[in-house]
Image (tube, rainbow, N blue to C red):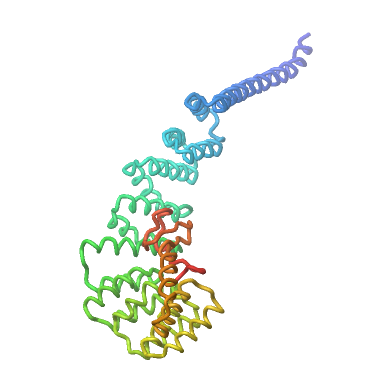
Length: 376
């Protein structure tokens, strides 16, 4: 009898182990069923437009199921895109309270900062973003968001304080942004020319420091350096000829130098403004036929309304008594007056006046002169 008892002991132990394991499985299954039920309930609230109840239901699950964070991030981003910033903030704040791996926690903090920014809560967004600029994986995106904040608040000096961090990235747009922040800060407090020279040397990709220094030097009658700066900008962006050529003229270039510049821009870059100015140069030298021939050849190669207008003006000089040319010139000019002159290469925003900062996408130095049949 005692021997039989000893034989049954292993069986009893095995049975106890099996039942205990089964009990754990039952608890796990019940827990999953509860989560599934709550999740289904939350989704049902969403589908029936009861969003507040849905958020409450879904946020309760975060304490149970932290593994579904990506789903919550997607939901919060959906609310933010719809303009429901308070709902997005509630979700991201709840996620921000969880103990998560560092990289995931940084991502959530960044999303929360974007919520605050979208809601206009800049004082809450700034410290969250400033704490993330050393996070290498998202540094560039964080800096761009931070610069958007400083642009909105016109806190140019704060942006300039991040120059060293910007130079740890490969971002061209961030460097252009920093250069423009400096120029904005100096609009109220004039600085020596050397400050612009240092800025140009530090951020050669930006056009604005060259442009601002050139205007400053023209006012001071330092024409040679001003002309060099303007020519450097034309080398970078020949499409800006319509705005820059009048400034180059103010630097009093020699006639031969002026003609060479216009010829190069018209031949190499087929720039409309340069072609029109070259025709005007010939006309002023009483070479009206040469001006007309130039415009005729260019119009055949590159149809453009502004060149056609210049052609009419030259023809009027040749035939001042022609009655219909003045009327045609007025009609063409009235047509051109209705056309936008600039567009943003980043977002497509169109405008009649130039901006260093695109009013639509808030990017620096992306608004450029229009090209095409109405372009300059």
